[in-house]
Length: 114
Length: 115
Image 1 (cartoon, rainbow over the protein chains, first blue to last red):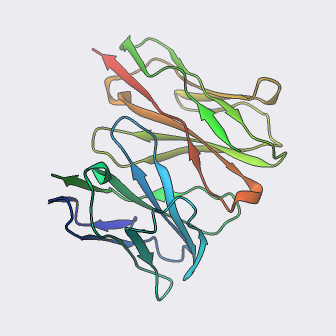
Image 2 (cartoon, each protein chain N blue to C red):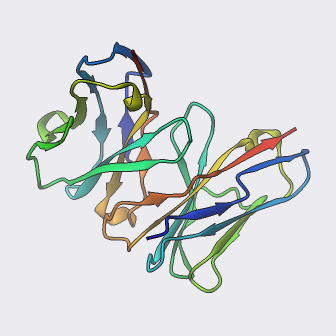
């Protein structure tokens, strides 16, 4: 069974530029998550989808971050405009549903904002 | 509000030593799930175990064992006879039943196993 796929793996941009990350979850997983992991810290949830609906986006900085999962499968996370403090690894995860099932993580996208 | 504390930021052991990673959690819910994940140098988080709040039985899987104690809100992880390949950052995480499976992670413990 294929795991969670993410691209790109690395991205370097200048502040005020925009960037987009892509995630393809494990087949059949209804729930998809985006996390931000700053160096030396644990991941922090940004947004959670159940199929194509948003379950929780309370920690998403909506003035610059946006995410969508239009067909309930793939998802895109965008940052516009980027700030220096957005430098982090962006992790995508998926799980079968919301019932406490384990989440499976992708390899992440390492973003450096200069 | 949920909170997970991993007080040990870094542990260094010599191969074949046993090591215990501590995890203390806070939650108001009576139904919740606890997890451990491993993050090797490659960066991908690897699921290790999930326990629900109604099951306090300790679990053993090979060299790994977990001790869940609701009385002290702890979910500790022990690696027996550590190996160099165990070197990684280990995260403890919590999700409340009512929180839609949202995970709250601790800060992680970096384990270094030296040959």
